[in-house]
Length: 391
Image (cartoon, rainbow, N blue to C red; front, side):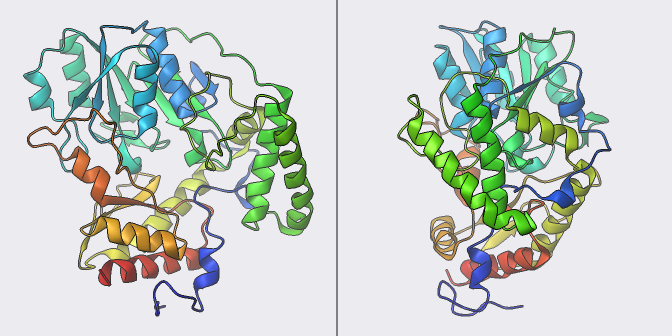
């Protein structure tokens, strides 16, 4: 399969109009059997409205406030930083290497007396080595928040992802066909935190309608697809009638709202209980492999991880691109749902030897989730390769 006339209409263009940025509901990926991954089966887990809300809940439980700091990587999205600002604390940025691993040698030389917590992220679904990080935080007497927003599955250093931190957080919209959802897990003797406020009936109806609408939009519900248009109209009517509804449109699956910490919706909890996580993981790995095989060796780009180890289940396919601005814009124009973290928090410093800001600028995050067909993944690989080659 090849792509010609990049950026204009061609025989493959219809794929571009129906490639979901995030997973969509699919009856073939539901089950009544199986066990969810560690984060979602943990006895001390709390389902909340977003990954950002889960981070906020962890910070508040430690009573971190003014005059104290939270250590965060220079490679981040704003939803990692905003909960720190909300409680009046300060983000203290630390550098990472070319794989996103914390530069512990740099941290060893810092005054961490005001730091209560460090956030360490498993970027793109690729686990960070956690044993040495756990040893470091224990020696320093600070708490560890294991950010699993990109990594719902797998093991690292002989233990499940999410089991190394005093707290671990996950983002469910990145893996489940839900419009909201995050999870907070408390480990190492911390008690389960008080449940956040329940959702309103309006929230529950809207969340259910979102799941159906997104599924129908991407033609995942078979004969039900036309009927869902009525549900979409109902949802929009409810949205207009809600007095507390913001006039700012929230992107599908976004965690950038700065609202209160709330419980997860019932539809999200239902999806946790009835999703076929084993099949979901298998498809994500297969899609990643297709993209890796297609993009390996393309001039002007570098595959961050060519082969996945047995336990790794990716959130996205990360691709370092030299001409990142041009390729990102070209892919957006073509309809590829591409993301990157090229807008770090305004106060993020430049630190000698740090790769975080460069990674945020150059690494494009490309979809490889379970709602993509093999033809769509092949189209994505060819379209991305063409975009990179033409720069």
